[in-house]
Length: 56
Image (cartoon, rainbow, N blue to C red; front, side, top):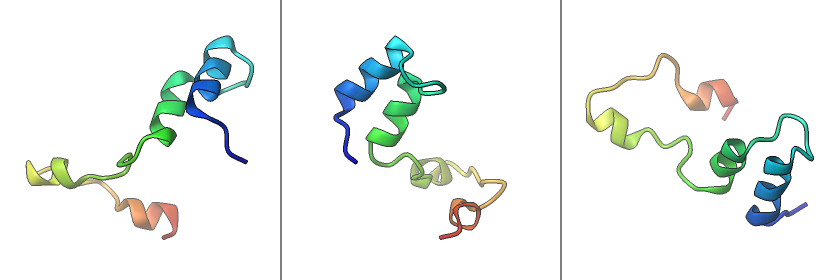
């Protein structure tokens, strides 16, 4: 099912879906959420690899 971002954001702000927040909508609606390239370029290393955690 596809839900437009504006509708999901409205639902989050209105409290229509328990646990859904505007922040959560933003995180899943925009690309690059799990992209750590820029952070790694500064020398940051993750405690675990996202692919391993997500089973990819």
